[in-house]
Structures are given as structure tokens and as C-alpha cells.
Length: 128
Image (cartoon, rainbow, N blue to C red; front, side, top):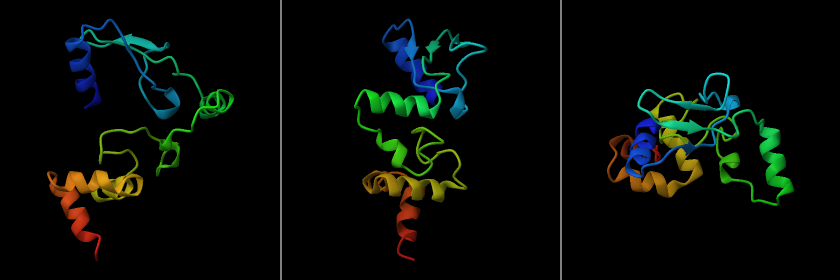
């Protein structure tokens, strides 16, 4: 899903390369043996943080006095990135995905419930 959107953005903007925050430690594909690759559709992806550990990321944030990204306070924030919602990794089903998203930001689920049936069902089941 993300690759299709990245490919579209890459092509529409005539880019030479996409720079991503993917890390091997998160289970992401970042290229064979390196941190750059060209996929079968001609999109070049570069992941400069591919070999960084969580400790390195957090040290960089600390020493450069940057705010800690809110993702680290989210459910499974140290295990997975943003991902398409509610298709977050390590959720047992769609309702569990919506539950995690609701914990992160209830307004996202409220807005999604206007158009997405599973979000609407999640909200209806909250009162039980």
C-alpha cells in the first residue's frame, strides 16, 4: 500500500530518489546488503537510518534537543511506524487496530467513522 503511494508521488514529482526513515530493526526492507535499492518499477529508495538502533535514534533526539516524536508514546510505538490505519502491525484484528488508533487520537476514529464501516462499528461497540 505505501509503495503504491510512494511510487505515485515519485513519478508525479519527477524525483530521482526517495529518502525514507526505514530501519532493518523494524523489519523493513531497505535493500540487499545496503540501504539503497531500485524497485521493479524504477523507484529508487534510500534509507539512511537503515542500521540505526532505537538507542541511536533516541540519543540523536536527546543530544540535539529535539522533541521525542509522539509515536513512541503510542501503543506498539517502539515496534511499528505509522502504517496505514487500522492495518497496524501486531493488532489481532481490525477492531483492535481501531482501538489503538482511538488511544492515539480519538478524532481520527471519529472522522473515519463517517466513511469507514469498521470504524463506525468500533464506535458503536464502545458503549457496551
